[in-house]
Amino acid sequence: MLEEAAGISGLHARRHEAELRLRAAEQNLLRLEDVIGQLATQMDALKKQARQAIRYRTRRPASTQGRGHAVSPALARRQCELAEAEQAKNAAVRLVAERTGEQAEASTRQANISASCRPCVEAEARAAAGLQRLTMARDALEREEQRAATAWPSSTAGWSSSATTSSANGALPPTRRPR
Image 1 (cartoon, rainbow, N blue to C red):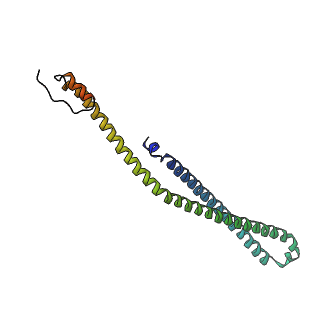
Image 2 (spheres, rainbow, N blue to C red):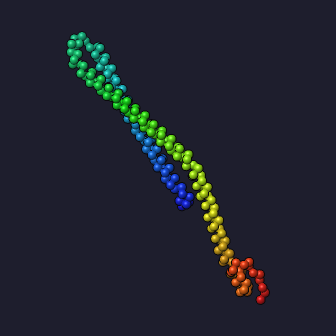
Image 3 (tube, rainbow, N blue to C red):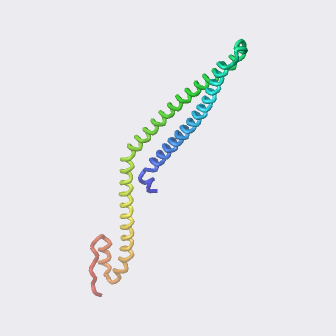
């Protein structure tokens, strides 16, 4: 209720939304790191296969040299797979760089917004505190007024009617007259 009176509930909602977007960006970065790790694993396996193919090609016996065309398609296929894996890795690295830049920009924007909101939040907090003090003072005055109103008729029992009438008009309390 105080937040609504001070007008800061909207700031809390915007801050919560910014925190949710930041968490989502962090989750996206974690997913990208996983994809990069998987691509790196695949690339390592393809590099290993390419090295094995090169080793096989250099070590094969001379009798199979004439059949080089039978081995070349497998090697060409592996090299093609390796090139595709390199392209996929490069694309993933570019995507991670873009997402990291976007996340950094979002963090910067959030920090700027938080910094620009800080004086407003502090002013609203001061205003809310002042409002609370005024509300408490008003409540205390109302209680005092009610206490005085309930105490006033009992203390005027021995007074004359003209004195009671003048006090109702805002005059000072009358002095007691003996009967």
